[in-house]
Every structure is written in C-alpha cells, then in structure tokens.
Image (cartoon, rainbow, N blue to C red; front, side, top):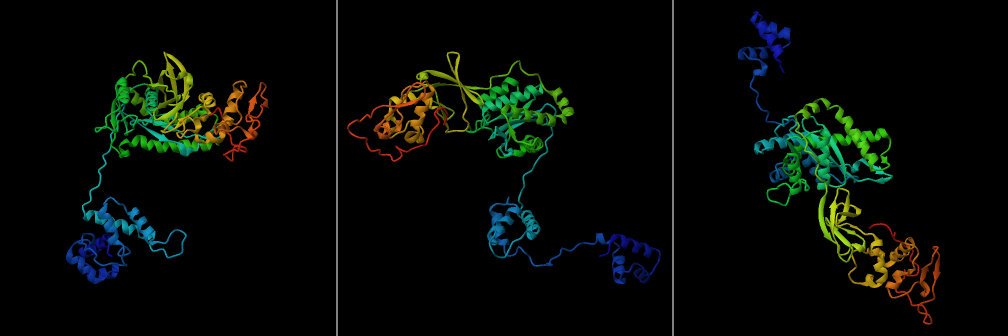
Length: 491
C-alpha cells in the first residue's frame, strides 16, 4: 500500500518535470499507480475508504450468536467476559473430563467487538460517572472494613475483627478504630476518635447505608435518631450515598484495599501474625496508619486550616436500655440472651451497651460487666447462675419444654459434672454425683450417691433403695457416660 511519504516524493518529481516512466523506475512503483494519484490529485490517506464486506476467515461466533443475542436482549448490561464464560460452561467438557475444547480464549476479542457493535446498534445507554472535586475540610468519608483475611491471631487463637476506617477526601489522611461489629457504639467511638485526632470538624461526613446510621426501614432512608444527635453535637452535615453505588464513596473504598495491602506487608516483615493481646495489635495498627499518614502531612496541614473547632466534650458512645430481670434469670438485649445472678430477679436494671461489653446498673451503682455478644440469636449462659435451682428441682430437665438457660447436651450427661465441679469450687457441699440419673428417677451407678466431704474426698452413702436392689437404668449411658461440660464457662 502506498504511503503518504512516498506519494509526496512522487508529486515532487512530477513537479520537476520528470516522466511517469522515470518516476516508476526510481521509486519502484507501477506507472498505473502513479497516473491514478496524479489524476486524482490527493494523497493515499485522503482516498475514501470503502468498508470491507467480505471475511478473511470463518466467523467463530456464527453458531452461537443467536443464543448470545437472546441473552443480550434479556439483559443489555451483560459483558463479554461473562458471555464467554457461559459459552465455555455450556459447550466445553467439564474440567478434568476427556473431550475436545470447543470454546477457547482466542475468540474473546472477536466477542468483545461483536457485543460492542450490537450495543451501538441497539442504542444501549451506559451510566455516566462524574469526576469529584475535593476541597480542604469539606468531607470525611467513613466505612467499616473486615480484616479476617489477614489471619491475625491473639495468643494462637483466630481473631475476627473489623476496622472503622475514616478518610479525609482532600488529603487522604486516615484514622482507624478496632471493633467487632458495625454497631452504632463502634461508629460513634470511631468517628469521634477521628475528629479529635484531626483536631477539628469538617463540613460533612459521608457513608453508605449503614444500619447504625440510616433507618433503612423508613421510606425516605432518614438518619437514625442517635446518629443524627451525634452529627448535631459536632455541627456536621450527614451525607448518604446511593444504595449499591460504592464508587460514590470511592475515597474510603479505595483506601480499604491499600490499607489491607500495607497491613499484610507489615505482618510479613514482622514475621508473625500472632499478638499477645488486643492492645498490642491495636498499637501495631496505629503505627502502620501513622506511617501512611506521614506522606500526607503537607495536604493535611492545609486541611486542618479549614476545619472548625471541636465542641467542649465528647458525647457518650454507649446505648442505654432498661430491662426487668424475670424469674428465669435471663436478659434479652439486642436479640441476644445473657444469664445473670438470681439475686437480680425482679429488679429493673439499666443496661449500658458499649461496643464490646454490657454494664448492668441499679440505683446509680454498676453491678456487673458482661462481654457483649455480636450478631443475633446467641446466648451467654453461666451455669453458676442456675445450678442451685437445678439441684433443688431436678425434674425440670424432664419437661417437654426445655428451659432456655439449660443446653441440650447438659441435660443428659454433662449436668452431673457441672454440679459436682460447681459445688467443689464453692467449698465442698454435699451434692448428688449422678444428678442426671436422679432426674430420670434413678440413683447413680449401683444405686448409690456420692457426697463431697471437706478436703475434696468423695465418700459414699448407703444405697437409697436398700433391700430392693438397684433399678435398671433406662439410659444406656447412665453407668458409663464420661462426657463432661465445663461448669464455669459460658455457652
């Protein structure tokens, strides 16, 4: 194909009066080509291009295009890589099975061009993304990020956790707070920590539709009352992004990935992902974030100049609720169940819900602190709260409705060990050895009961049904069960 550079030389030689034959010999061109461009008086690039209507090879998509087009009509937003994967699943043999590979990656570029051409012909509209302009002291974006994938352990045990992650959109200065759930208490603590560490308050805060901040059940998706009170205290304007549009909060979403990479690399340099306790791990997190913020010192100083003053004090980060302790010694808090001592029965307790624990208050006095359960439908039952009542009422476990404070596995085999160990820890009061057997209307092995004597030794009393012989145990595990349940733990 003749190039413009060679055609230019041809026109120059024609202007100098050289013949077509001499030019053809000098430039190694045909005389016909020279006469064509001489008569047209234009360069090759200016020639009108005729679309090619023939194929140089068979169409690899011809057998499958009707099916592909049907899928595109059903959902025009389908992308070529998804369509290629669908073709592989349908026409190729399963992975590892014998057979010929019909659909390969070699048709991907052809499929991309064909799909793009189809969407242009069908006038398929795409979403428009507008650039964001950031100003100093304008927006603090925040979100929660799950870090379970880092494989961090505390004392050798897996440590599942989240981070409250806040980022100033102008300088990308960031702050983190360690937490275990996306609760309002964690949000309030993390947000206030970020504002006080920055030394000022921006104009707006931005988040997605967190249930801790947004009432997602309302029609207008209004902010929750607690969250709105937090914003009003600091003079902040709240901003919620659209549902399923994470790119609208792209600053913090992008920072999530970079922070995970930094933490993973720092753990690799450290040579271990195990920490002594939570405080040591929190110190490690803060050191990594501080090193990341060093590179943002200059724009962050400009950001600080635009921040407004902080209020005189922080607001409490706990939620309060009043609960009456009923006769089963159970507290129902945030759809989770906690057992408490029977001495609280009938009292109206003020429960302060912090991000990682509960405080039980009565008449301005803190009675107890309980570790908080995360999620819903969970129980934290301490057997020591109910063991005395179980001893006095052993037939309670025979009821068709099991008391919610007694686990299934403790009813048959483990309750004997629980009772024995609990009494032993309390100073050696006599208890039945086989409480499970007594619940079933029988004594222990051989018709005897054991008593705990001072000093921790076990003595045997005479048979309860003397003269009648031992009863036959209805449960084959009664004489040989060796399973145990810890008496002082929680379930």
